[in-house]
Amino acid sequence: MIKLLPHVEVETQSNPDASIIWLHGLGADGHDFEPIVGQLDLPSNVAIRFIFPHAPSLPVTINNGMVMPAWYDILEMSIERKVDLVQLKKSVDAIIDFINHEIERGISSDRIIIVGFSQGGAIAFETALAFPQKLAGLLALSTYFATKDTITYHPANQNLPIAIHHGEYDPIVPFRLATDSSELLVSKGYPVELKSYPMEHSVCRQQIADIQQWFIEVLNIK
Image (cartoon, rainbow, N blue to C red; front, side, top):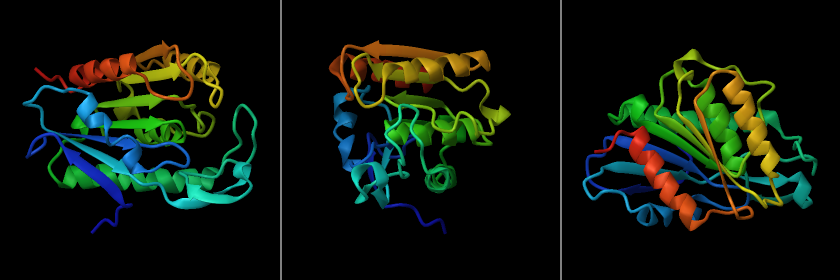
C-alpha cells in the first residue's frame, strides 16, 4: 500500500476518468489552489479528480532556516536558485506515488495532468518529463526548470503537451526563466505553449480561462 503525502481531493463528478495533480508553492499548502476547481467552470459532465498534495515542512535556508511547507530547500537567493536536489528528488518520488496510486484506482496514465506553481512547478517539470509512462500534460505556472542540467528525460513523454504560464512582472521568479525553460524544451522537440500575463507572482482571471481551455484540449473533453 502506497503511503501518500497528506492531500486534498476534489472530484467534479463521481467515477472520474482523469486526474489532475496540482502542486503548490513555497510556504503554501494543498488548500492554496483548491478554490480554483470551481473557478475553472469546466463542463458539468466532466469527471475529474483534482489532487492537491501538502508539501512536507522543512527548514528553508533563504528564509533564515524557518520551517515551512516546502518541496525542497532553497540554499541561495541567486536568480538560478541553488536548490537541495536530494530533497527535490524525494518530493518527485512522493508525486510519482500519487501518479501510481491514480493508475491503481483505474485512471489511465495518459489521463493524468501534472500542474505546479513556483516551487511546485520545479517538481512538476522533473516528475512529468522523467516519468516512464505517457502522461496527459504538464502545466508549469510561474516557475523554473530547476533540474534542467540533471534530468533524465524519458521517451514515453517526448510528445507531452507542455504549457508554461508566467507573469511578466514576477519579482520572485523572473520571466526570463520561463522563456529559458520554453526554449530548452522546444530545442529538444517538445510541444511547448508559453503564455505571459501582466501580473507578478500569482494567477489571474484570464489565465484561469486559458487553463480551463488547455485542460479541455489536453483531455479531449467534448
